[in-house]
Image (cartoon, rainbow, N blue to C red; front, top):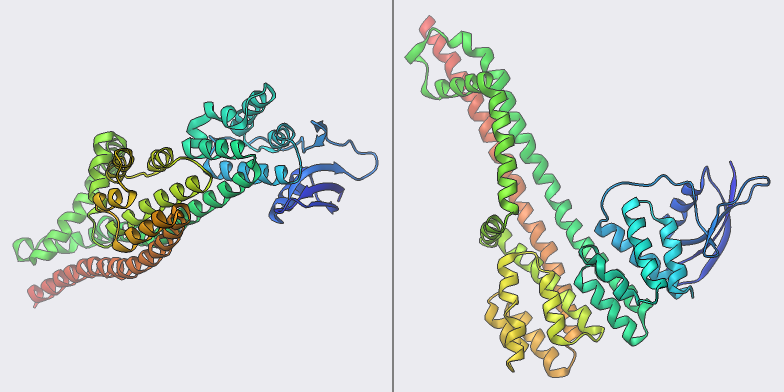
Length: 413
């Protein structure tokens, strides 16, 4: 197995040199990243081998197969983290971007970074270079980078952005992970019922054929349903698929989004969780922006855009105009009707002490914990409910069949 020499930096910006055995440069790259290191140079140490070409004086792997797909939030987090580490290690912005272009696994990310690099080489600051890619970076990210450039603290601001993005990702992943088990239960329930009605029940149809009205009503209903699934199962599947596609398209439209997001906020138990999740995103974004010197009104407008629920965002959009008119943030937040007294008191303390940014971040941490706790409690109720519903449905089908069999035996006697 060939040996590769590498130069890398850790999360604190300290340089690390070493040699590792691996099958390819790509394997070396994955190994370094798994150890929390950002590679600056990877070269083949075995004699007689050709080293990879250097970009801007820094060698990068040249044999990685390009990945496909659009840039994602995971790509944004990786880019921000690695750029912050390289800047802390003393690399210039253009050299760091060159390394990231060579390290990119996706064609889309590589071409995007090449455009950013070209703009930086042309004399544009990073905030202006990433502005044409607003869909990927977002206003929040761009304004944070601009504030770091103004204060001469770009690497520190990027580090804060990494922390912000990681918290958002962790919260989103905790919500998704918590919903996996109920989703599996629901899928199993649907498959079980369809299998019972479509394959098991029809096996008893010949047994009950001659009984007519003497067959118990529950048995007749189950048999008719099973017959329907057998005869029209394919059409039913196509219909469900088309209906799902139509509903998905409608839900993504402005009118559909307005309807289902309003219903989601009124759900028992989970409606409050959805609201706290949106408030968490808003308060964390606002606190991070204020902590980096972004003016309050601009920070409010940017933080409001990070809110996904249309109804919540509409309420938050009235905060900035209220403050422009001379009002206090505490009063504006109270009028939205979404903030609890504890949150209002924290914001009031932040306004009175001039530490609004830290109070907003503290509020986001409190709401983070409440969201996680509420999800666990909600799922504690939902999981047995799904299991009980599945058991009752299957038990109902089995009891209906048994009632029909007992009726056949009674007629035989």
